[in-house]
Amino acid sequence: MIVPLNEYDFLKRALAVYGDCEAIVSGDLRLTYRQFGERVNRWAHVMRALGVEKGDRVAIISQNSHRMMDGFFGAPLIGAVYQPINFRLVAADFEYILNHAEAKVLIVEDFLLDTVEGIRGNLTSVKHFIVHTDDSGARHEGRQGWRDYEELLAKGSPAPPDEVQIDENETACILYTSGTTGRPKGVMLTHRNLYINAMNSIIEFGLNHSDVYLHTLAQFHCNGWGLPYAVTGVGGKHVIVSKYEPASFFDLATREKMTFACMPPTMINMALNHPMGEEERNHLPRNVRIGTAGSAPPMALIKGMQERLGWQVIQIYGLTETSPFLTVSKVKPHMHVLSAEEKLRVQTRTGYQMLGVDIRVVDEDGKDIAADGVQVGEVIARSNVVMAGYWRQQEATDAVIVDGWFHTGDMATIDNEGMIEIVDRKKDLIISGGENVSSIEVEGMLYKHPSVLEAACIAIPDEKWGEVPAALIVSKPGMQVTEQEIIDFCRGNMAHFKCPKSIVFVDALPRTATGKIQKNVLRDKFWEGRGKRVN
Image (cartoon, rainbow, N blue to C red; front, side, top):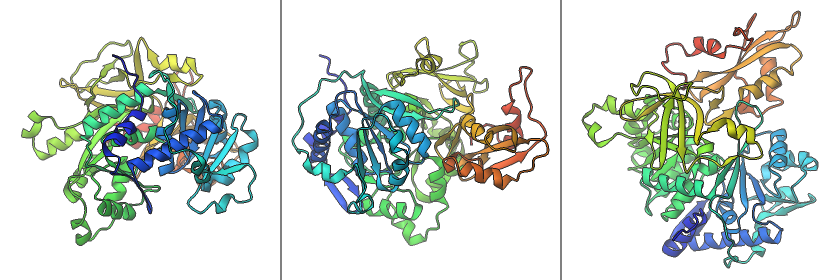
């Protein structure tokens, strides 16, 4: 018998087994799985009433919210394609993404109303504009064309909607990710992709119904790394964190007895640097697992979490295009004879392939490199978690999926036990605090400044964010401009996390014989002595 895989089935099981158990905590709101299931049903009925049909895109721009959780399960229930969008982007990004995906419905958190209102006339496909707020709708009162999320939900039936036949290989969500092409690309993940990634999460994180998961990780990041599905499937409790701040994080972790959270290294660093008294530390929950990804965690962070807080850190690696998990870094049973420092060294490495994932590290000719932990090649993967492709960008899809293997663009070593370690990025993508920054997009903005002749954007190490964008600039003859003027110009036109944090003025940029800027040469002095180009 073949039963199509559908991520809604994780909630279906929770309703059957854990209906009266607590499912979601969001501020003062507390929902059991039965109550959450009724919200999801209402969401599905409302979307159908708005004319959403199978395959239509429903976009949401929001911080972490229990309302975003409604869509994670409501969309697959009716065959809609869910589209969480990074709320930190600017209006031009929203406009491009919504038009490119041809979203039919747009759900927006109220603090973004003015931003979206400014581009509303340019949105060619959106038929319904919905706002969600915790302020009784005050911010959108009097605005034409906006409907209140909770008021709409109240009109929907809590009964399950009629079933829709869904092929597991159909698109479940479209997630836009910034790459070196500058323009965001829409990653199409299927129901099968999401289901298998969630199952791997259950296995590798050891999830069960006793778990209390804090949503510190942005839910728009690859559907919160798929944890909304995984935690739901085992009947765990979701605690929503709309905005990460160390003091409130520790307070919530203690109050709700957190057992699991996912945090990029930047969040871990902020947590470790948060001043904490002995009494507060003694009340923290024990036996906590922290999943981390986005950039390689320094050994000091893993050591700090384990020694200061007594929390276990599990590093995972992957990309939006792989749903996202490919590898996990754990100390194997036979490694327990290693010293504490040696075990930490293992944990800082990228990891081993997860179940159902084939990993290879290859040279430029596509041949496997030596498994000696020294030779460097590109990581390629084959798995049921690899995306279906980029939305309406076949050429870009064909460039990364070659002969059935997905080319990550990440450079790594591999040892004789199959553990890989990312040492550099083939692409010039900058990952700052877990956010993707396209160097080409930044350079495009720099070139708009009247004083800039040439520009190159690179990643430089940063203690707080792992790495940040920096720009090297050649000024036009006779023109003078300051570092702050360039930074202010960028901040006035781009999302702030994309803007260069440092400007270096140079007489010329190094180039290859064919005229290409040698970014590796530019990076060398900033990364010298660090051993690898990923901080």
